[in-house]
Amino acid sequence: MNKEIILNKENLAAINKQVSIPTFDRESLKSGIVHVGVGGFHRAHQSYYTHLLQEKGDAAAWGICGIGLRKGDQKIHDVLQKQDGLYTLIVKHPDGKIESQVIGSIIDFKLGHDTPDLVIDQMAHPDTKIVSLTITEGGYNFNSSTGEFDFENADVQYELQHPKSPRTIYGFLTAAIKKRRELGLPAFTVMSCDNIQHNGDVIREMLLAFATKQDKELAAYIEKEVSFPNSMVDRITPVTTKADIDYLESTYGLKDEWPVTCEPFIQWVIEDNFSNGRPEFEKVGVQFVPDVKPYEKMKLRLLNAGHSVLGILGAIHGHPTINACMEDDLFVFYLRAFMDEEATPVLDQLEGIDLTAYKDSLQERFANPNIKDSVSRICSESSAKLPKFLIATIQDNLANGGSIKYATLVIAAWCYYSDKGIDKNGNPIEIIDAMQEQLNEAASKTKTDPLAFIRQESLFGNLINEEKFTSLYSNLVQKVYANQDIKKIMK
Ligand code: CS2
Image 1 (tube, rainbow, N blue to C red):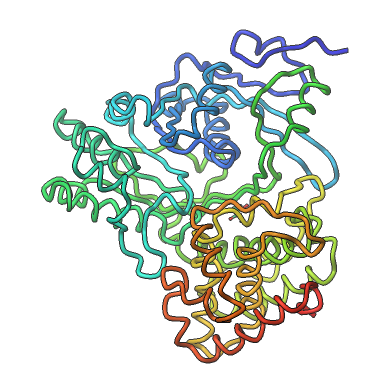
Image 2: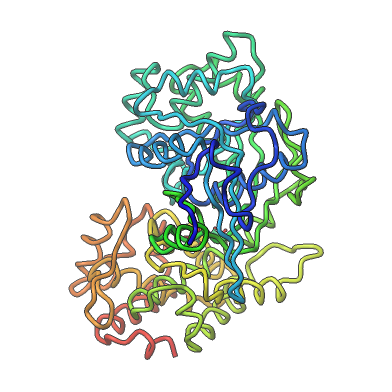
């Protein structure tokens, strides 16, 4: 029987030796990185890479201070405070092997809604060289169809009036950059790690739009001094379950209130464009490239879109997880047909990348039976994901005369999903989407107006005027509503 060990710095040495622990001197770390959005993905990816570098020595300048801007971040803040920033990363291999390691790169945590001043001070601290972000697609506050900054957002309006009480990432970044400038400190790099094409360009453009409204001179300074590398990030990180927490406790006697699980695969491709220095991430396998755009498009249009194809169809069929979809031959066929016939033809040329091998590897990763990535995670915030992951591919194929049938069925299924919220057996589907009310309202009109769902311009742009799309969509959505079994339509 294992003795029970609560995860914190005092207890590190007592942890079962099969769980690796940080061997570097955590006390000497400075917060060179301030990271906003300490979700599972950050803890499986950037924070893990940073830990690996610290394990190699010589990266004491690059400890991470986590930041949460939303009320919902209180829980991760409290857990990490209690655990001295430590957490366990549980890597689950397809063959059943599991590796657990305690990650030590996060050394502090602050909450924006509670103590905005402390967050601004942290970003404006001389040690801070990078502010990195995983704030999800929705956090960027742009209109999906126009790409313009959304000034109607109530929090944005508030912080434009009250620059000392920021609420969104834009208010915090401008306040901190302003303060650094007043203190004579060099600007930090803003490093986006979200699944958005040209993520660095997007945060730059949005921040400049916001700053220009607030303080034109500051906007000019940002334009000149702050760098915004684009990056492609990748590691499948399902939502932590109670079973994961229990696993650590029953196997090692380790009590970690919020471990993270992930697949073994990991990738980070980033542009070498940092205004104030950077960690030597290349030493731990990160690829620095002059232009990341072709890689990010490939990943978003194949991996993320592929996930959504499986997730949306899987949800209404009643498959609980992505690997359950991959045990279903029709889903595997459908995924591959979508990737080969619709997503691949509209990708950019990628030198040295074997796309067939990439797609094969995606299929293997999705099929990992131990990851159990829930379709509800994949479908969450589809309104922020699908315009870029999937609808963009439809638009490109319409322009090129290519196939749109696989992706269009997913949109029809998304309408049904948003309307009914049940799977084919009548079981409720858990829907998490900031736009769910609006999606549901539009979808619920489908019976009388089959095109109602795709009239939502902020999501579908002018697809409503594309006859080839509307006639196919109208046909498919009516089939989906008439026929409870999505698999019959997928054939
Ligand atoms: C998923 C991603 O829900 C989603 O959008 O496709 O979270 C995906 O697991 C990661 O991007 C993998 O790198």
